[in-house]
Image (cartoon, rainbow, N blue to C red):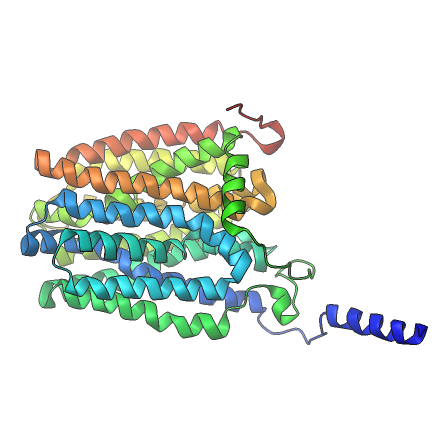
Length: 437
């Protein structure tokens, strides 16, 4: 009897012990990171479209820029609000399943928009479906992959994965601009739908939810068992929000990141092309400039990840926001029918700073909130997208009322100065005190 029990126990212990494997030339974590990079590129393809389609949709359907901006606003808001729930759903159902469903939602929304005839359909396809899909592959997805698969090089990997969105912009912006100019907006929408579908096989066959699935330790760390699926994903997401909302650093991170979203996705990504077109610049030329931002965004974000591993994240954020604000104040004076050196300097400078804020913001979330940091970062990202959504809507309204986007550029510059101050007053975890609500 005892020998039978011992044999059963030994067998169970053997099942729990990872099988010894020869050390691979490339740790599986880097393959998972590469698949994540490609996935974000595929999902980000749609984000290249809104700025290119504002004028064509206005011309074809007669919809105001405010109406079109409202759909873009809904997309951006859902992108942010979905992210924290997606992080919890990944804990419950696994990364692969959530991401495959998200890619399908993006493809469906982009493809269905080809047949739309009313502005409410724009809200449904662009705003709802694409917003939910892209939100499920937002930066909380990157945070989940990084937290599970990496112990060493987290800052660098965060920077590289953050740069994936810019890489998608680099790939798809010039292509979509050419398609819109020569073939119309519908083929461009079909193109981004296909881009999302092409990524699905990579995710399904190469992505793994946890290092323990393949008997490995995280890169730079010790082997840990895969945790059991976490039930009550929505409840946990809301609970984490309420817990984080009782601390001062959460509001400072959320507020500064809202300004980050307002000054990037909401403003530059949505209105740079139509604003440049207002000044006589060709759409393809303006889109190419926006794509160049993507080139330097990759450099700036990866370098920011490297810096985050070595320097105080608070000071890095303050510098990034301050420099961004100064550059936005000069932008209205740089708009012209042709591309000239000062505009090129702005594009390079702004590209380096575009999402350089992400690695230090995520590092501060990890410092403050530990194992809940991916979900907390999802909520901080939600504030980023709410800020972007407000400016995406208000920017169109300002253009309809004043005939210019200049007022929005100046306001965003002033907000960035506020974000720099907010970053500086974030306390370290040991010094943070709870806020009584």
